[in-house]
Length: 154
Ligand code: 4NP
Image (cartoon, rainbow, N blue to C red; front, side, top):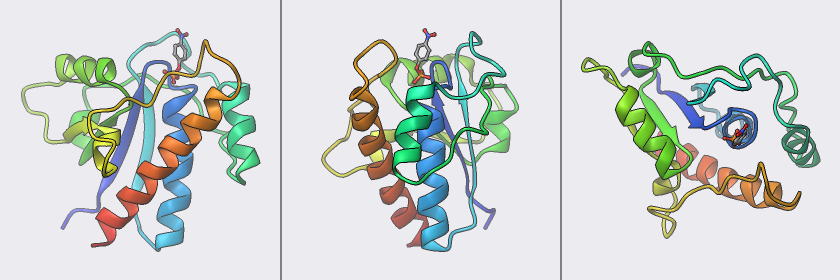
């Protein structure tokens, strides 16, 4: 079996998807899973930038350092290189469907579809909201990471 490789995709790749990447790296390590893990954005505004300082602070508070990550935009190659692509919200998913080449091999879907009882829900964008939005984001992406670790362990 090819080693699973997971790509998390949001809009800017500076808030939700780098937090998902960080949470998944920890969940995979704790579960002893060898997964390739990355994140990207559908938009290009923040390419090359580190995660938002609020995202870095929230992750650091949970013991996870995401400060070294740098934003990048989704590329055509990602649809071949990764086995699974997880969109953080429905708009991200619809953008992925539009960007996917005909020869895409990755499975893609909504991240919270992986969490029992949360199917169809979005990881809300915390960018323009209050700081505590990042706590909600962390909880959502951690729940998803735990569910994914179980799925790839089974
Ligand atoms: P993200 O949050 O998609 O979770 O990284 C956003 C970051 C930046 C913008 C929007 C959402 N922006 O419009 O610049």
